[in-house]
Length: 618
Image (cartoon, rainbow, N blue to C red; front, side):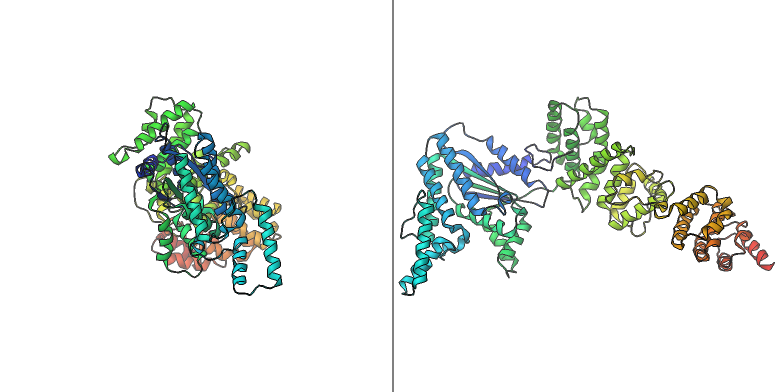
């Protein structure tokens, strides 16, 4: 199993991008910078953040000013439990105080900043957008209410109730804020905001650090939490000795902005809001076939029995080779096996699996090389193999992998059709794949019908192993949360299931069951006929095959099945029809229609037509 979590090990050739982000921050030399790492869900933004931090740590000065102090903030963790703006300020202030105490420098400035943050939390100044504060709009919360009362007093509009309210608010502040920094009596929200920024800048200068704030999982948050976090970030943007790296799906951020500013339909304004926060946008590169193949191989290596030392050697070699794929170099099984490390047989087999899966996982719209979806695919495969072993099903891993790939990437209609083919076949084999697989093996063109007509299905059919002659019931069984294994017999009563078995095993003796079949439900006779016609479809010569006796027995028991058998016979290729079938079905009421169809078919042999005319003339 593979954990769905970020990593500081580069599995996707992200180090080059992470090094670039680190270089931007280093080159800024204390000047403020904000970087946005964008990309869709699961593409590796969190891992990019980890790699960026690791890259910056390589540039840490040994002593003196300029040390990078990291604050990692996950707004999603605070959602529903705390105000995101207040939480981010708290985390930053606490980190600065701890660093000041550790270095024994700038402690008074760090405490001043922490005190101001605590006062802001107490006073609930952060409960309104920073834009409102900057414009001098009184905030909601204690100070806002006091400001409102003050204005009313100046206007001579205070009544007894207002006076009582003011006393209550003053008592609250007195009780809760004595140990905190007291703002000046003539301060205003804009002044307090500026004082907070000034205090923050002085704390950084006094401690001698550059603060690098790494914001992650912002796109997982509800719109309100997202905006609150962005507003808190905006308080500290463009201050010296700061760097913000914000990892988020920019599409989700824009959605949050649009939701927050209700009625704002102008996409340009929505984009501008985010762009003003992010000076340098960087998109996580989309993995191609080479990256997906390397990623799969490194995941398999990481989960193998190799020693940690050997795993690191292989990972380093693969990462190095991946950085030179633009020169035409490849990361494949031959490259990995040539590293001088003896690989377990099971791992070599999985490297082959990576080779087969990579092109489809990179090109399919439903995975598109997404690392999180790839991990989920492999975890699902691992779970199903475990179920297979625990229940003694004995499914081949390569077969299960190919079937799971079809389940995840094909259309639901195509997967349902494949499942139905397996369920209705006596041996659980999807035999309809045979001509397609044969054509694919010869690199020949082949036509696919709906719901199979899809570029993915064409590539999937050519992927080894071939499945047409494989019993897939076991593979469907271990994956039955997606498609239940329901055979024809599963839908029958025990009595009807017994008759079906007898008809299939001894079709030439089927007539002894006519009376018994008349006593079971018509719906069950329909299911039995379904199963017999599937079996009959395998016959290549239609003189008097044994399965025809079984079909005629069911038709005799239920005349409604006659038209179904007639339609089936008329759909047989004309060259398969032989004279022996004429007397076999001639007495049936539906035979006339079948005979007329064969007489008018250019594919039916003249010997058959002669037999029909002879039989009718009697």
